[in-house]
Image (cartoon, rainbow, N blue to C red; front, top):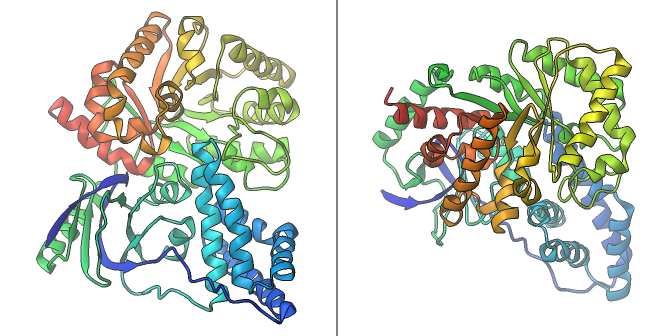
Length: 504
């Protein structure tokens, strides 16, 4: 048995058999004399992939699948591929490869970490279409739990292997990619390696993110010990109550379905509900009434527990087909006031148990916050709502940190460490877990925020990736952080860190 040091993307323990997946697909450089046949072949491949995507959608709530289908159904993509066939006599696979690689190259050169991550979606589509053109499909080993080994984790892998996927080992990957988000939501351990290592198919393997180790070529006794451990922890799902220590563990979610995990782990509530993902499920704006139904269901699910809705945070990687938003921030609300007001009105109507909080993202100045708060207050008056409603903000921009003293009249602040570390230290969001390069400096910023919130009686929590890194928990506690909002599947790891810290 060999022990391999790994970088943790998604926490957990997994065991199973190795299944190697090659990201790269053979592309023929041969030319054709039958251009119409190649066009027809490409059209059939597009149709087959879209059909496969639709089938996968039936068994999942993966929003990215709909985006993949929309890209392949865009007539512009087929038009450009046909032009390559007509002008260069390329075979279908070559024509498609040239066109899709053009867009992949544009995304890779974009000055945006978000767009770099979304580039994986294009690479995923490329793989799917080329496999269809080559009539090449993967053996899913339906009756075995598998550990996927790949260069990069394409999001469709998580959907395709949803019945058998136990864990993932990739040669590169980031914490904010679609694949990483899916693994976290489904509690699938995902690690990367900084070195090249050849894994043999069907070898038994264990991933243990607590020790950041991968155990390769394990014997059955070793694996049995991990099976027993997993059975033990699954029987005690709910996390401990740390109210005596003044600590709250909350959940980060992107849909009502994920609220079930908040209840499953008995978390204190929801510290971050990413409402933009609701908007991204449609190719049109949701009406006020449609949004109300979603928010009302969420509030009822979290009755007697606080639930914090972040107003839609679009721009960079998170785009809506019906509006233009090149950058995240308040200007999107200014540019599309009706969209914002519809969401605010729907939220206010859904606040039946007065357990709701509304939070604004990417605030840069107090004027930004006041502008949005005034809209909420006016909507409350229009609706005749007298229910208690907390209004807060995410602290995640350089400008807001520099003018922290201006923010005295806010009900709560949530530290968004993903964008904040990028803005303050130009740290790639994918490398947030590599905190050694910036943590000391960030802690000084956090201490300032803690003192500010104490002075003005502002409730403070942290909802970024840093809040979910167990090794950092004690450092954050020493800095004064008491409320941790994390992906529900990370709550057990944070619980273990708290138990050690308080010697419970």
